[in-house]
Amino acid sequence: MSNLKVFKMIQLVLACMVCTSITAQLKSLSLKDALILAEKNYPQIKAKQLQVSSAKANILASQMDYLPNIKLHAQIDNATANSLAGTYFPYGVVVPISGAINNTSDPKSYFGSIGLAYLELPLYGFGQIRAKVNISKASYATELGAYENEKFNMYIRICISYLDFLSYHQLKIVQEKNLERALTLQKSIIANVRNGLKPGVDSSFAAAEISNAKLQLFELEKKENEQKNILANSIGILNNEFNPDTMSFSNALLKLDTIHSVINHPLVRYFESRIKESQAKEHYIALNYLPKFSLLGADWGRGSGLSPISKSENSTSFNEGTNLTRFNYAIGIACTFTISDIPKNILLKRVEHLKIASEKENLNGIKQELKNEQQLADDNLVLSLKQANEAPNQLKAGTDNYNQKLTMYNNGLASIVDLAQALYNLNRAETAQTIYINAAWKALLFKAESIGDLSIFTKQF
Image (cartoon, rainbow, N blue to C red; front, side, top):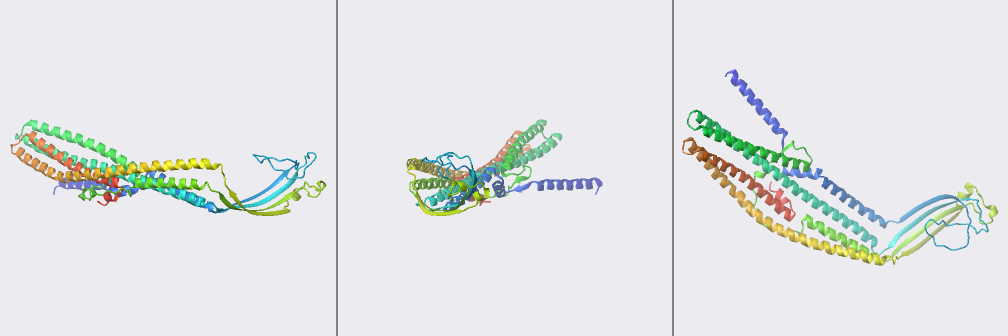
């Protein structure tokens, strides 16, 4: 073996190694992996998850209303004690005065102190606290429904983006094969022209076909990069790190039975949860008409520099004024019934009642739209599967016709125009098969979207 042949073999091996290395860098990204990445990185999903966590924490906060309200208070004051007979309504910052009635105003100030423990325990409120907790639970269910609906819509968007990227990727491969055929054909034509077997115009015609194939390939590469970038932004990775998983989508689609059910659709569940939340609010407002019963308790001690015996024994000493010398306690039951809130509660209840009616009408409209979408999805899927199943027949016919015209051309029985038309028909058949298969996948995805169950799409691969 000559050194030149050995050198060429080494070059070939190195080229194969480089190609393998480049291919390894671009890992095959499956649709399921793309969905996992999207759920992890999609900003709107993260926001919905935080809203769900917030609503869940609000349930615990509302349940705290069952616990007693306990206040501890302590203060030390230095003030005058000039009291005067008369009555006034306590309002704003009017400070109560504790001391004997004086004939004149005494500017001297005295120390005083108080330590207080106050307890208010809700005894009975006709289920008002429970109704408030139910509002929090209904709000949590609504946020959870919004999250599930947003996640489902995100899955659909990612699937569409993935299928678009996959479609252009496969169309690019088809066009690469078309360009390869055109280049091979050109070499054969040039050899025949040089040998005087074919006219020179044939080589020019072949060069034009190659140029056209390259232009189409460049356009497809541009569109593929655009779709790849859209998908990469959605799932939060770099667009130079992956290629689509073409093997999973090469399998034949299964024929599914017609399914009509909108009960478990995420959008339906979300609107149902909104109705339940408004109903919980309406029930809570209705209970606000009723009184609230509470257990009250207090224990306190006081100290003062003022003497209960004589003014002459008053002391301005800090220690004598702040030392607690009197202790008291109190216990009682309170009933609170705010009559003035009744008209307002009536209006608020009316507001929630109208909201419920509005949400129910929206829900009925959504159910009707989903039923129509399901019927359309079934029809589209049937037709798309027929197209996908018929496409191989067109491809076979195009392949046979091209091989026949190529043989006839090489034997002088067909012109370059006939061969170019056969080449065009073959490329169109390959392109059509790719488009029809992708359209069938999208039809199945549309069916899954209308039903609200993505599994009928993802379980196919």
